[in-house]
Length: 172
Image (cartoon, rainbow, N blue to C red; front, side, top):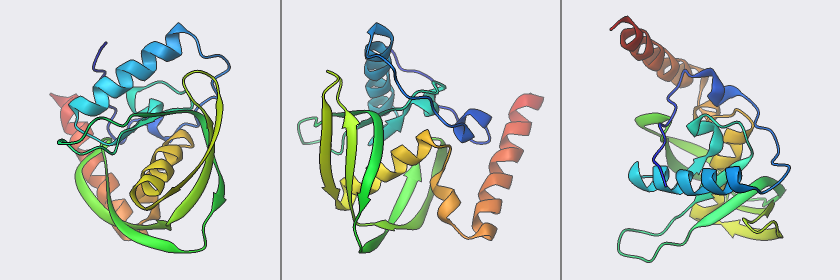
């Protein structure tokens, strides 16, 4: 379909709360296809609709490595309904905060509920990399970025860096 531009911080839309999808129509189907095209082109393993400027609760994920068959997951109106007791610290990055990676602590296991592209309600347990990716992308739907889990000092440094870059870009 189409590769859409990915928003970069400090774009305010990345801090907005996305609206639930009321109906899976042609607009949502096109959005999902475009999101996969955009995510694969980036390349990334997950993308939330707000990252392409659409404030809808839609997430796409594909954790398959280059030498593996694609394993696309579409989550519409996803919510975490259960968190495991154990946490894990992993290095995270974000297409909306390019070229920066930080260690973040999150629950290692979760249970999510969402609609698939056919409108069927799915409850799915996830652990390890998939659980981390799902939490990261669902956070985007609530205007939360992974840098929000960092110390205030680190987060402020990241924000300052991207604020300066945005000012330089608009000055040119």
